[in-house]
Every structure is written in C-alpha cells, then in structure tokens.
Length: 541
Image (cartoon, rainbow, N blue to C red):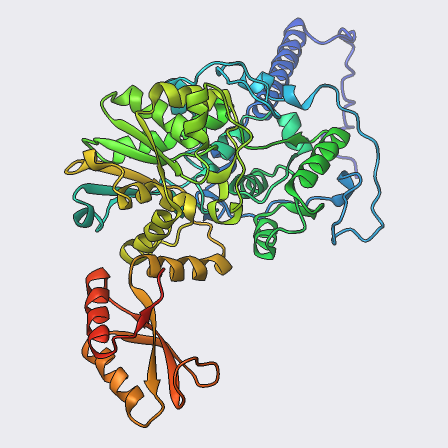
C-alpha cells in the first residue's frame, strides 16, 4: 500500500566550501599565554626549592608539630651512619674486617670550611679547625646565637638557693647541668654545628676526646643528622664510651693516650674530608656559650655579681662576660679556678696563653684542668672580667657536698668550683648582695662520686676516726658504745685488734669510725672520750 505522503525526500547535500585548516588567532594566543605561565611557575618553584636547601632553619629541624619532641628536639632517631665512609678505622669492634673503603680528596684545608658560614661574624684567632680573625665577639653575635639555638637547648632555671642564709647573701644557682648531656657546652656546640655549610654537614665531623665538648658534639650532631665520629683512647671509662654511643655517634677506640686519639682523628679527617673539631675560642663557639649571660640577666633582676668557672677553658666566662657587661657594666663578673693549676691567672699575668701547665688529676677536675686554648678568650677575660680567684681541692669537695645536701644536685668539680669560692671565703665583698652562680656541669663518674662524698664528709668534720686500748674483758666495749650513744654519735665502723698490739697483755685495740653533726659536735665527742680514755688517739684528716 503506497503512503499518501509520497516517496521520502532525499536529504539536502552540503554544498559549501570547506573552512580554513589553521585554528583562529585567539586560540593561538591563549595557548601561548598558558605556556608562558606554566614556565614561570616551574622556574619559581625550582628557585624556592634551591633557597630552602641552601638555608635550612634550625627550628625547621627541631620544631616539627607531627614529631614527638624530646629536649626541644625531634624524637626521631637519626639515620644510621654507614661505617664504609671511614677509611682505616683503627680499633673498633663494629668493624669485622669486611669494610669497603675508597679514596677521598680534600679540596681545601679543614681550617677554611667555616669561612663562608661565619664571614659575617668577627672571629678570634684559632689554633685548630676553624678559620678566624683576631676580633672580639659582639653583643649582636650572642643575641643571634640565642635566637638560633633556642629550639635546641634547655632554658635552664636560675633559682634561689637555701645556701643563701648560710653564706649571708642572696644566692641564685643557674643549673646548666640540667642540659641533656649534663653540660653547658651544648650551647656553643649547637651554634657551631648549625653554622656549618650544608656540604660539610653531609660529610660529617670528627672529635677526639672524652670531654663534655665531645659528648655535646655527639648528641647534637646526631640530632641534626650530621655524621659524627668520636675517637677515644682505650683508657676511657666504659660508661662514657657507652653514653657517647647512645647519643648517636660512632665511637672508635684508638691509642692509649689522648694525643694518640687526636693524631688518629686528624688523619681520618684529612683522608675522608671530615671536619675535625676541638674546643677552642672561635667567635661562633664563644657566642653560643655567651647566651648563659643573657639568660641569667633576664632571670635574676638587680644582679650584683655572677660567678663562673674559669681555668684554661674559660670560654663560658669570656662569652658570658661580654653579654653581661653590655647589658649592665656595674655587674661584677668573677672567675674561679683551682690552686693546683691557676692557668688563667698565669696567662693573664704573662699576657699570653700558658700551655705548659700540667694536671695530675684530670678525671676529677675535668675540663677545668685544660690548657688555655686561645688568645680571644684571654683577651675578653682581661678586658671584661673583674676578678679571678683560686680555690683548694678541699673547698671544691665541700662545695660538691653542699650542693648535694641543699640542692639535691650531683655535680662534678667544674660545676661546684663557683660555689667553692664562697665556701673558702674568697669573696667577702659579696656579703649582703645578690649573686648568681653558674653550675655548668654534672657529669661526675660513679666511681668518683663515692670517693668525693666520703672525703668531703671528713673534711667537713662530720666523719672522724679514733683508736684506744681497752682491757679484753666483758663490758668494756659496751661502756664505749654507751658514751657514743650519749653523745649522739653514729657508729659507722668498729674494729678490734688482738694480735698486733704493743700494749699490755690481755688488751684489745679498738678503732671506731663515727659520724657527727658538725665541727662543734666533733669537739664535744672528743672531749668526752678523752675524759674517760686519756690515751685515745684521733686520726687527723
């Protein structure tokens, strides 16, 4: 059946001519503009990335919100140090003979590695690893150091002490032994390490000693992810070696003396392009130590005097004096050193550092017994420090005892030497004044702690010993103990000798060690015993 509409119509054919093959002019311009904007964005992003790599901030390394914080630093453990980076380790039990080594050449001397980073800071003359000019540090340098290390070290308290009434003055103790490594040296070390160029931070640093300086380098270099190597002699205390390894450093035992370790460290630094560090009086290190003076001035208003440990390593004294005298020239700055080796006093008198002073008791005195390490510190001390006094070893021991009893602070000789000046009565002009004492170190080895406390109790007339001859009959020892109990003396030890006695037969020699309250109590006990036993002999301290 045919549709009424008829056959379907054919679609009309497009008879127009084809358009141009190129896109319109506006499209071309738009594409070019997008390309230019993309190139500018890429170049700007790369430039910012280079700037961030060249100048990382200390707080960027330490103050991350997503990381656990420990002592103001990131709690994340630093990456492990590959031992194959060292050539010829020496005596190290970590290396089992399968270490691969390769040669590395130094482009320039180690002494010039800090030149770029420290060119804006006036620096002192140096005899070790840092290039510096013989200029004194400025207050601006110390302020810059305080700002840069604020995230990496503790702002330790400066508290009023119960010892004030005993010595007739207001005493405030700046407790720098509360730093993570137990030493004020952290301040100078952290500023020193953060001032290193990025290239040297990647290569690493090396030190050679068991001092507080080395411990601070080990800890803060690890926290900053700088490879750190510590060379220690085989005579170093095992506890110190363990502690240094726990801080994150690779410890190498080499040589029997400190000189052997230093020689080995310098050779490794030269062969592997490490920066050899040792404690010195560069402007950077002194500026970091000088931040103590800033904090003391801020924490204790209306100060009259501040007492610092001195000795050969007088960087803390010199740097802090620069800060305090700038803030208030009327504040007296006093240094204290040991009578056994008055290195600083002799150097000031001679006008140059004295290096031939020997110390036979290094383990007790620690860094205080070091040689005078630079003319910059000496020049600052001579210009800014008001007084330097020397104290006896006995005064230092009693000072350690006072801090343990009154402040519950276990400190070493370097930390206690400032208070020792008051114990010895060397500063009578400070009576009735407000005085701050810097307790800078608390790294006393355990085997020395017991000896120091026992000796201090004897020097303080609180432990005494006497001997007497009694008849070897029942009841005589009991009568002696009755007298001691009546005089409230505490018996620590009692011994009886029957065989080697030069007196009459059937007698016994009794030796007693007792504890008393003080010197007056000891005198009362002595009089009571001599009244009953005239032949009693007291062992002099």
